[in-house]
Image 1 (cartoon, rainbow, N blue to C red):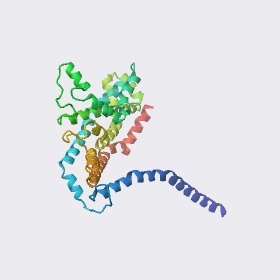
Image 2: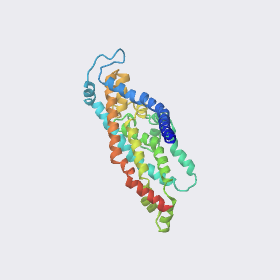
Image 3: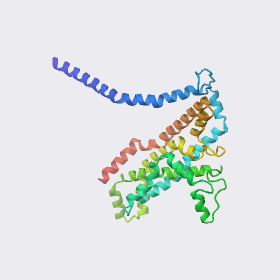
Image 4: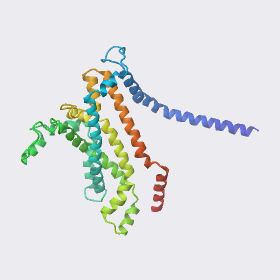
Length: 319
């Protein structure tokens, strides 16, 4: 009669010990998440419904008026368009370039490691350093780029690459491509290491060319990695601040303003913390909606049970 009672107490004790272990390891992470994620969001929402200049208590409640002001501001609407252009432009430029470089560097060649390092170096550089370097290179008349163009008889823009409203956003996009292309290449190379070698050998036995092998085997199996990279690129482009702030500060004539630079301008320069709070909440909502839609429409195909089962069966076949 005593054995079952001891067994029951043992199971209960084991269950409580497991719960305590989970609480011990999860509580610090939840505390940090609440402190650095939840609390700033709550504070931004609170500021967004007050008119506040940065000092004194929050007493001037204005409801949703700050949101109406932000959404009716042409500068903010343009900043949303600029962010979307950067999202699309970054993926359109970095995806084919990164894929081509990854396929090239995945082949055995002389200096392979050195080339990988050179391509990845811009990504590990601090944004401030990269921004300052490019700001100096793109200076009108005295910049290195203008000097090179002048040496071959070409005319650079009179106002400079960053001073012309028609060229500034495109120039920033090119600098962003240079800065973050290394991340795409490294992720794609990591994805290529997961392609079973037996598939390449079977393709060679069937007489497939290198291009046919990449098009029929490497690129399709690299799909999950490319979709994950595109998600990271999209979120990073929506949150873009530092590089634009260093290169142009959002100018000229607000032609490169992003949502992040808009809210920083409103908060730190104009002392409109309520407007900045409303802009930050709108930025958060836009990023959240796009992330959820991307997860449901694109990334969900990589986690469907039928897709996972097919991949596992392919791996078993190749073993």
